[in-house]
View (tube, one colour):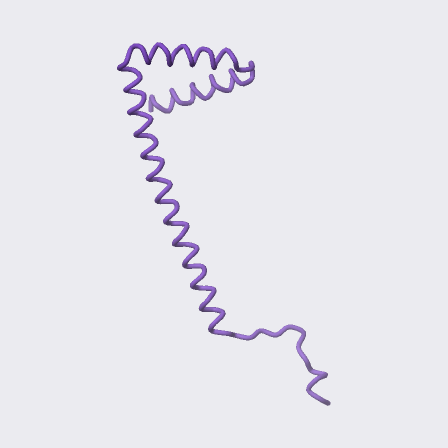
Length: 100
């Protein structure tokens, strides 16, 4: 019998270079993901801080507050009934969240 008749259907070769490349790629992907998550948290914190500062500035300026309230009323009136229900539900969730 020749060696050709005893061929295996599947063969597995251990290549250290391929394994090392896989490990490096996985590490780089994980570190990039971790960095992106940290940056997203920082950005979220900055946006939240900016929103609070803007809310305080609007609340302290009577003219701007009146204009803001009129614009909000116009925006709410332009919503469909389903959109208005959704907006009210979101506001209720926000109020409950703030109460905690």
